Image (cartoon, rainbow over all chains, first blue to last red):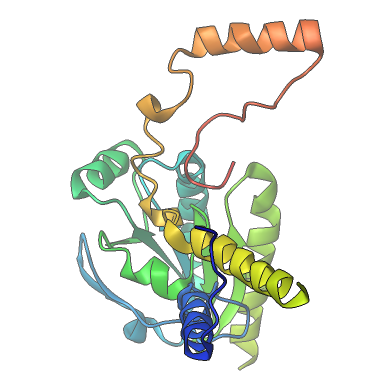
Length: 174
Length: 75
C-alpha cells in the first residue's frame, strides 16, 4: 500500500505544535547582558550562594574531572583569585561530575584556592545553557553577564584576564 | 500531481525534523562516560600513532581522526 500523505488539517496543526515545542525547549546559551541565573550549591566549605556574592565580580567556571583543559585552568584560576581577589574577584568553580569521588580525586591532585561548588544533577549548567567544558561566565556586580567563554587554552588566558580586569575596572567606577 | 508533491515535501520535512529530535545528544556536562579512555576508537595510543603515521606518510592525510582528549566539546 502506498504511503498516503496526511490530509487532515488538525494533524498538521498538531505536528506543527509538536515541532515548535521541540525547538522552544532546547536550552539557550547565556549571552552577554543577560541576567545570570541564581544558584545555591553545596561546597567543601558549606554552601555557595550567588545572591551572597552580589556586588562582586564572579568568575563562574564549569568543570569536570574528566575534562582535560580543566586541569590547565585550575592553576590559572588560582593565580587570578590570588591576584584580583582583593579587588573584588570571586572565582566559583562549579563541578558537574556525576560522582563526587571523581571531583575529590581531581581536587587532591590539583588543589583549588577558590570556591568549589558541586552540582552533580547539572541544574546550574542547564540554566546557564553551557555548551562546552570548561566554560567560564563572568558576572558583574549587578548580576548581569559581562563575558562568556567556552573551552580553555593557553592562548585564551590573556583575553580572559583582560575581561576580568575590565570587569573589575567597571566595579571601581560604580 | 502538484498536491501530492507538496504533501510529499511536507511529509519528508516532518520526518527529517522528527528524526533529528528523536535522540537528544548528551549535554556538555553529561559527557563523563564519553570522555573515558575505553570510549576512544583506538584504545592503544601507540597503535593509533602508528596508524596516523602511515596515513600521513602514504596519503599525506593528518589530523582527520581527531585530537587528544574527547567528549568535552573543547578540543
